Image 1 (spheres, rainbow, N blue to C red):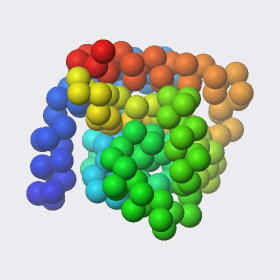
Image 2 (cartoon, rainbow, N blue to C red):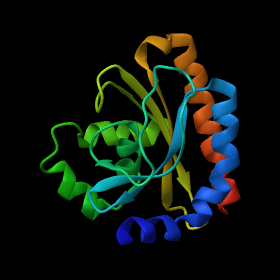
Image 3 (cartoon, rainbow, N blue to C red):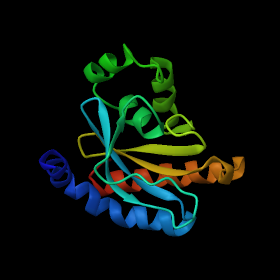
Image 4 (tube, helix red, strand yellow):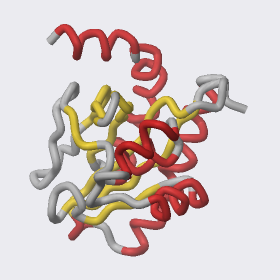
Length: 172
């Protein structure tokens, strides 16, 4: 509990700055949105607004997931510290160096049921004033609600919103 509290306190600025962006995304799409940070070889959910639709993925704030699995994990690894990333890639069943290079080129990641079957996730990086990744902004939805047209709309909006958050954190 203390470790989760320390993580939350250390990321208070990210959560406060991110909240209006999350609310805007949630209001627009009514899908689950949130922020993950990297913590060693895991990702930790530090902010989240769940969809109000009956079928949705719910991830409690403070919960952890593997860093090498899912769109948010791939974003955090693609822009993360090489030493940690190399260690994770050495044993990963889900992620490769080529995948991370593609994420860096695109500026986002999409996963289709990689962590939870039937869930599509889109994530983009948020950077600070020192050009380091702070968190991954994500949107998750049941795959059956994510048409190709909607996917393109989500990607465009998530990447633009992540850029706006980065600017709020001093990124230029």
